[in-house]
Structures are given as structure tokens and as C-alpha cells.
Image 1: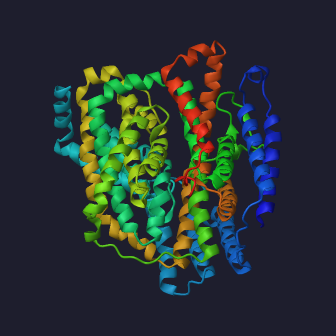
Image 2: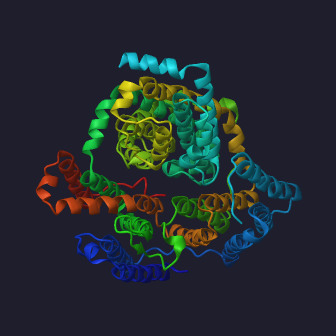
Image 3: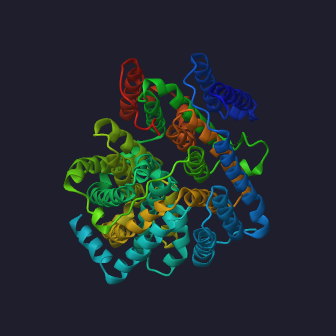
Amino acid sequence: MGYRLFLLTLLLTAVAYTISARMIPMDPWTAAELVNAQTLPTVYGLLLCAALAWLLIRGGQQADPPSPYRVLRVAGMLGLSVLFVLLFGRIGLWPALGGLISLSALWLGERRWLPLLGLSVLVPLTGYLGVEVLLGLYLPD
Amino acid sequence: MWEGISTGFATAFTLANVGWVLLGCMAGTIIGMLPGLGPITAIALMIPVSYSLDPASGLIMMAGVYYGAVFGGSTSAILINAPGVASTVATSFDGYPMAREGQAGRALAIAAYASFAGGTLGALALMAFAGYLAALALEFQSPEYSLLLLVAMVSVVVFADRGARVRSLVTLLIGLMLGTIGTDQLAGIPRFTLGRYDLADGLNFVLVVMATFALAEAMRMVLLDDSTPPGRVSLRELVLPRPLVRPLVPVVGRSAAVGFLTGVLPGAGATLASFFAYDLEKRVGNGTRESGVAAPEAANNAASTGSFVPLLTLGIPGSGTTAVLLGVMLSYGLQPGPRLLTEQPEIFWGVIASMYLGNLFLLALNLPLIPLLARLLNLSSSLLIPLIVAFSLVGVYLTTLNGFDLYLMLGLAVLALLLRWFDFPLAPLLLGFILSGLFEENVRRTLFIGEAGYSEILQRPAVLVLLMLLIVLCLVPLRKQGADPIERH
């Protein structure tokens, strides 16, 4: 994503935020206050729009785009994180965590089976013993 | 007072209470190191243990848990840029780069010594000035708070490098806007929740900090193929050389004073204290990374001690953590306030005296662990990155127990990664997010009071001083000056 496109996306988000701020429903008493639930969000939104417009007009230095290979690696990590969130409700937090660690390490190029397996088992096990057994925290499914 | 102090030491230094301080410090440090579990959780988890103790021992243990957890939070901030506690965010600004430069051991050692010094100086100040400061803290009300918070936010922008002021303003505003999501505290109106119940309580702090710092950092490491140089730390390296220590002494002194005074103010707390101390040090100090670690650590520990002033002397909890502690005190049948000092001096002074011991224990417990903890960074990036990602996701889940928050976190991490990629500083975002609710609440209260007559507000001496400071700050961009310490992160 280019710098200007990024700024433009932020600007559109800021505009949407400001419009939403003006649409916050209020009772007559709150609405009559000098500074109510809408005021500061509107001020923040307008200031952000102004700052982003200034940056867009002024332009700026373009950061070198990362290689598609690197972007793919990041996307893969994000995909695995989403998979973890989707799965932990079904297979349990700690097994899903073990899966996340092993698959992400494999994705990032780790091929030594001992540290890979060791961390994938030890970290969830330590988490389970520490959080659920020792501290007695109940984790809902 | 001397009689009270001797009573306090007699209470704190019994064998049983020494043991409880040790247990509290250990439990606090371990829980504080865990992702997403800060001082509030640590204290809440130890409440069942405290019920089996007498009030003095229970409170002495709980105080140990509190500053132990604050101390423990700095370890993850330095090692993997994951400050699970708000008050250790500023520590990560220079601590994490030090760790990436192979100086994790030194950074952790500085943090340990500075925390010890800050906590001890804070305990000394608490003993000497508790009564006077409590009266002063009561003078600080909504108008003063609004201006103080505005000063903090304006200074982040105006002291930024000329080319980065607008970018700092952008991230500060994004942080403030993120802070407005959820139910409006004063009117009870849902704002920007998109009709989702999950957003009714707003965004969780741990979620925002883990997304913008830990997860975004892990993704950046993947993007740049950035790996940490391996480094081993021996116990001998934990003895800091004299040329390094000498300039850090005034840093710790200044930061402890800033931290303690900020901690005394109800609502300000250790987070604001650590930001103030870091910023101050980068402006008036030598600006080294070492002082950037020492300043927030000394300040947040001194602030933790300072937050006991309004709690013990007025019965006002200045932060979420001290609110839980207040609950513990009330469950013992104690009524914190001026009468606690006169009617149960052994508890009042016992808690304060135990802080010296607690800080000593924290240092003794943590220094030997540093070589072990620093070895974490020797892991290859293909193992370290999955660990950081796992640590962040589990940390947020343990805090909120809500899967939806994890999706939010991933979305925020992508935003933070893009902001970092395009050279936007992330620290103002976090500062804005932390201060957003407090700022809005105080501004609205101030203007509500103001409807009765603004002249009364303007007659308050602290308001006038802060207003003048604000005007001076706004004039700063008119002159040329150097880079901003906070903006760079």
C-alpha cells in the first residue's frame, strides 16, 4: 500500500468517524450540555481530518515497498493467527496454541524438529499448569 | 511520627510478615511477567490468600504483590516489546532497542536497580510527607486534571521533530479516538460500538498495547527479516560499571520525585508518571538509552508507592489497583483515612515499612533471573516470532476472555504495522488511548462546574500555572529545536 493511499484510507475513516460522532443518540438533557457525548469525538475527528489533509497536500517521503515474498510471510502469519482464533473454541486454548506455535515456526522456516516440538508442547503445557492449575483461572470454551 | 515509624518497623519485621512480603513479591513478579496479567489481576488472585491473614499481614503481602507485579511487567516490555502493564510502556521505548542490540541483560539490570531505588525513595517520601501530600492531592480537581492531561498530550506533539509533529498529532488523535469507543461514562450512551455488545466496555488496554507494540513488532520482524543478535549474560555483567552508574543516579532521583508526586494524584498513577519521567529525562538529561530505561522504571515504582498516599490517608483509591486494595481493606473492617493513622498505626506504618523490605526482596529475587530471561532472545527469529505472537494472543484472551477481541487485535496490529512502516510514531497513539477517557471525563466535569461561573475556576492557583505552561508549550513550535524522544517510537 502506497503512502498516499494509506493517508486517503485514514482520511476516509476519520470522515466516517466524525459523521458517526454527530449521529450519537442523546437524551435532551445530555444534548443540552456544553460538552456532551458528541463534542470531543467530533473535535478529534475534525482535527484528524485536517492533519491528514495537510499530510496529503504536503506529500512525503515514500517508504520502499517490501518484497511480495515478505508480505506473503506476514499474510501467512496473520492467517495462522486467524486460524488459531477460529479453532481454540473447538479444540481448546492450549492445543490450539501448540498448533499456532508449530505451524508459524514451520511457516517462518524452522526445520529443527526438537526445538519446534519442544516449544509447541512446553509453552502450552506451562500455560495450562500456570494459568489453570496454579492460579485456578477458569477459561470458558 | 517517629513512634509510628518504629511501630511500623516492629510490625513489618516480624518473621511471619517478612515471609508474607517475600511471598507477595514473588507472586506479584511472576504474575506480572505473564501476558495480560497486571497488578489488578495479581492482587485479585491473591485475595483468597489474604483472607486467611490478619489485616496487617494481609495488607503487607498485598502491597508486595502490587509492586512485584509492576516490577515483573517491565521484563516482557524489555525482552519482547510486550508491556502487559501500562506503566511499563515507556520502559519498552529504550529497553527493547537495548535488548535488540544485545544488551538485554544490562537493560534488565538497570530496570531492576532503578525500580529498587525508585521504590525505596518513594517509601521514604511516603513516610516523610504522606500527610502534607494528601492535603495537596485533594486540591487537584477536574480543572487541574484536564489541564495536566492536555499539557501531557500537547507536549508530545510540540516537542516532536519539526517534520514529525503532524504525524505525532495524527497518532495521538487515533489513540484518543480509539479511547472513545464504548459506553460514555457520564451519559451511559454507547458510542462507536456498531451495535456490538463486545465493544460496550470499550477497547481493552492490553489489547491495544499488545497489538500496537508486541504483535506489530513481530510482524515487522517478519517483514524485514530482522533478527536479534545473540548475547549471553553472566551474573558478573549485572554489576554495572561506575561510569555508567554515576550519570544514572540523578536520573533515578529526578524520576522518583516525578513518579512519587504523580502517583499521589488520584487518577494519574504510574502510567502517566513513567511517561512524564521518560519525557523529562530525554529533554533535560543526557538522553542515553540507559537513562531511558532507568527513568520510567524509577518513576513507576515510586508512583506505585505514592498511590498509597490518597489510599491510606484519605481512603481515596487513585487507581484501579488501589481500588481493589481498598476493597481488601474494607473487607477486613478497616476504614482507610485519617483515622487509620491514629487508631491503627501498626497497619498504616507497617505497610509503609514493609515497602523497604519488599523492594530489597524484589532486587534479590530478580537479579539472578536476568541471565536466564535474557537467553530468550537467543532463540532464532523463526522461533521467537511465533512465541511473541502466541504470547500476545493468549495475553489478550486471558484478559478479556473474548474471541472477538482477538480479531480486533489483529486488525489493530495491521494498522500499527502500516503506521510504523510509514514512519508514524506509535507512542502518542498509546498515550492518547490511555488518557482519552480520563481527559473527556475531566473536561466535561470542568465545563459542568464552569456553567456556574468560570471566574472561580480561573482563580485556582494550579489552574493558572498549568494554563501558563500550556501557552508556553503552544509557543514552542515557533522556534527550532531537536528531535522528540517519545515521537521516535
